[in-house]
Amino acid sequence: MKKTKFDRNFDLIVSVLLVVLLLSVLYPLYFVVIASISDPSLVSTGRVTLYPMGVTLDGYKKVIEYEKIWTGYRNTIFYVIFYTLLSVSMTMAAGYAVSRKNLVGRNGIMLFMTFTMFFSGGMVPTYLLVNTLGLVGKPVIIVIMGSVSVYNIIIARTFMTQSIPDELFEAASIDGCTHLQFFFRIVLRLSPALLSVLTLFAAVGQWNSWFNAMIYLRDPKHMPLQIVLREIIISESNLAANTDSGSMMGEDAARQALLVESMKYAVIIISTLPIMCLYPFMQKYFVKGIMIGSIKG
Amino acid sequence: MAAKVKQQTNKKLSRRILENWQLYLLLFPVILYLIIFAYGPMAGIVIAFEDFKPYKGIFGSNWVGMKHFIRFFAMNKFKLALKNTVTISLYSLIAGFPLPIILALLLNTCPYMRLKKTVQTVTYAPHFISMVVIVGMLRVFFSPTTGIVGNLLRSLGLLNGSLMVLTSPSAFPHLYVWSGVWQGMGWSSIIYLGALTGVDPSQHESAVIDGANKLQRIIHIDLPAITPTIVVLLIMNSGSIMNVGFEKVFLLQNSLNLSAAETISTYVYKVGIQDSQYSFSTAINLFNSIINFALLVIVNSISRALGETALW
Image (cartoon, each protein chain N blue to C red):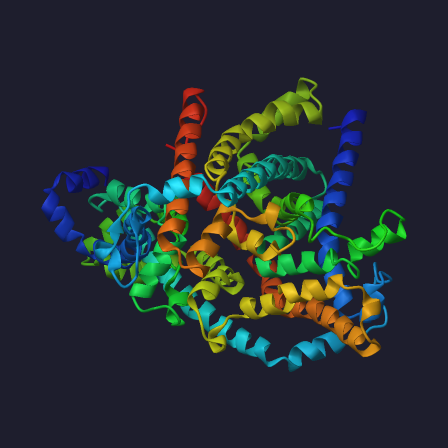
């Protein structure tokens, strides 16, 4: 089929628009990368724009020497592993249960769950409850808090309703298979895509989270990576130091301040790297997850 | 097979529950979690009507009725937080809602597969970056004297001296909203792209035969195909107009831009967790939740009355 002139021009405009959007999203990310390996004095005077200049790894060295980062890293990995295990197993189990027609009271149970998506007790009652349970200051609260996501349960239910028909269980139950056996032997094996989606949702969510840690944790030794990051890149004292003009500082202090700037770029890269490395592999799963969720959304 | 399922459903209720007890076992952890961590705090809302003292407990504290509600309605700080919340969310909705739709339509009509894939990969990526890092990036980009944005504006002669974006109240909504658009645009477009894959290609083919150009096909075929999705998302978003996310606002706040950057959620945090005014803070939060819930119900029923898609 031959394209009309209008359509050819239209394709051109569409492509130009997409390229503009592409560059405007990409450039800030690219800039962080080149700024992190450039000479900080060239970055701060605006000379670095399109490619790295005066390549140096001083920022990275400074980050690597900063012990708190590694404590944060270790804690975050620990939280991510246990939170993900807990969250995915609970979501899969509940998702399977509510996807079965045999579950008496299914509509009531769904209402009980979805209501919590639209109404909650709020920050203070939740805090007071956790306090009453004696979990403030205990790392275990980071693993428990938010491990149930009703939205994810709905994704799991939709997936299982479609891919694991009730008849399959009927057939298996004739041979004496119970729901538990069926769940562990059949359902889990038939749902690798769903498992990946839920695992990735949970792991990324926990990797990036800091709010619960800020509210519920007390001991600096327990703090996750994001809390340490926040101290480095966005504490208010940094901003105040920045607002003072450079001339007021001594030469040495000025260089120190520049190195801190450079460290910020490096720390952004170091903390985001694990996710960005995984990202190309998980992209299709995430997209799938959204699609499954939207069917019944 | 169908007959068997039918037979199954006709069995006595108690038998069916007993036969499927393991399903309830699988459901148990989630139900327990929700009872404790979702419904537990909801019960705790009663402290909004008390003068709650931790040592007296929920049952021992004095009942004060609407005292806290009357107090915060009279407070200028609360009015300001309310105004900021609504401003930021309406602005987010107006700026942030149409762009993902446009992006999805563009991607769907884009004839070059490689360009399409690249744009998707790049625009989805910021969604996975943590809020701390996003705000950290804003901090370094818009830094008053050393940031790239300030440097660029100074070299173009558009700015003298320091860039005040991070500290100026009037810049706060723009900073918040447009960085949000940057981060979320790609990710939000996925759901529309999904709806667009449901369009029957034969519709496009016959439209081409009738002489419709690409733009006409987008307006008359693609757009109607995603309208239900648009409506559902609009409902969901309207329901959270009073619910500006806590994290980003809190991270972007500083003493200088606070007059535009204090929202209800950050105010609730400061009054409740930092100052330990538990009852007062819970009252504000309850007011907020009720407005949100009411908005959701109203928008949903309007949409249903208009014969459009509804959530329930």
